Image (tube, rainbow, N blue to C red; front, side, top):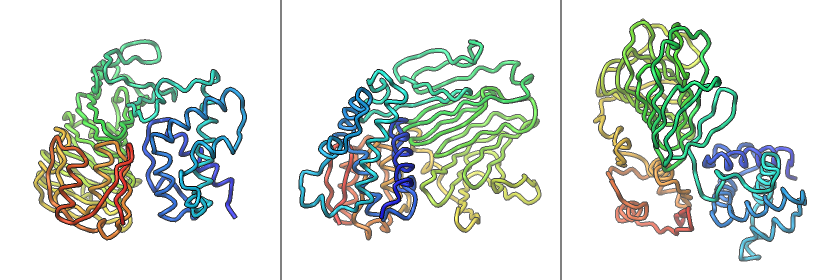
Length: 395
């Protein structure tokens, strides 16, 4: 029997992610109701552009009539082969159906006119900025403009995929920081110049929470999910701290890359210049005990084992994405697929589980995702099918 309350909570969570332009990962579908196959099915159907368009049509109708008619929803997303439909897990069917209804609910709640918001066009992903009051602004990449605080004062300038926050005396006088949080969808990157002069390049599928102005006391602290390159402005009086889901990185002024995606089991830090110290999230920094890195090193934090290891690396392998390059150095295929998903904003479902464990070294620039998969296929033969904005690799 399906626990419908859990199903609805999961569906509302997935609907909210879709409307915010965030890609759904396996780890977002929680609970013991779903097998790996069920999760793949739900992701595929909630990411299918054709079905997304059907969601929006249904959502508009629900907004106008409040008629939550299961038959209308089922007709819009029913698989073409009715025989196959009966073989699907009832749990995953309910998740997809409930997901569509939850999306309708979100449209009805936030857009009483019944029209979907301009930033919820099917298949479109947007860079968004969450303001201190919790409101969310869509950053149009083709538009420039001013970033303002609550009182209307200009605190930064936006140009395309970049925001430059202005240095002001307010940074010294402020005692309680106010935060912006930027979300970068798959297929896009973004540059921030923080109020202290620190430059941050954010990779696809990443988010950063940071003070509009750094206070004159304590650390300059930011919160990262995903991958980012930091070029930190030196300030011996205020160390710069990057907090991730596992470890914190403390620096005075240096250049480094942090990779901390929630779906990965490890957090990587690669140091290009200067020196950084690492310490576990939730613990106080102890300069005598915190391990330090030297340039050319990669530190890897295992989230499960809660231990750290170091190795010497070619740092260029880990900064290529800033220039639009994809570089894989002794990387398992499962991780390669996740990076391709983020880079190309495409869902890849791999049904060839043996392929996941194969290790590859390769580099690409300006190639289509199909050309990249064909390259790997010459080394380890496999077949795949392109379905709109998704790719399915055959067993």
